[in-house]
Length: 379
Picture (cartoon, rainbow, N blue to C red):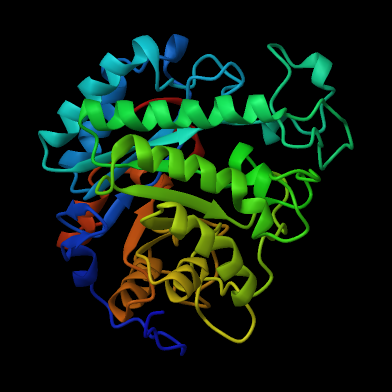
């Protein structure tokens, strides 16, 4: 348990907290700024090209302390729903070696986000027969939106996916990555096992409580831990919300959040990357702490906050009641970081807009505003 004070966190101004080193959980970072994983779908045939290496290297040059790559799919037949999503197995691995080398040359750490989409939530609501490729993997074969059904995963299927994650983790260590992140958020496969709406199993991998439903996630984490050894960092990305289901909840209060996270810690998780759509929103009634703050409080593990950092100048983010400067949300996240609510700050779309975002924030120079058109190219 941490000693975070549960009070209103007044921004003091300045960004010094972002510039502090971070040396914990096996990670050694020059500052507290993390590039958030963002799917770009620009790796033809699943192999990231030189443009992908250059894209990440630009963010490293721009001052990021840690890069978490876009989701990279493990070596399982149903892990991906698109051919331009990068793979993390087979002939894609030499390309990832080039990415690691380019980022390390700029004194930035990098971890791959390892992913299995399961029944891709982007396809929920569609007839599975209309989706090309093999039938997707799903814990209970339930589409929570439409009520469509598939054959649930067998225990043999589950074991194969667990092995695929462990193989990818071992490859990450061999290539020279600084750790791994397991994507257990947003309604993808690991999260589908955690969520009661998509996991109705009655065997070892199901249950009426979230602690019982952590067993698949725990086995993935434990298998990765065995593959990489005790000192290689394992980050786990979690969220309450799912794609298209923004009010979904795994935990309705701190006690239930502890029931979710404590087994993951016991299995080998080192850091929790806590995805919210807006970092400043309290996670539970009666406290200003966000999801990352509560995850740190109930586990004592370092946490990463993420959710619209650097976007206060966008029209849809009018949350600061008159504090409309483009740096207002940065001041607030820095104040909360200084307070110790969380340990690292992940930046997403603001880094797509401006690879130099960390350096500009540090120096007080204006940053480039995000525009959705920027998503169509690697810049």
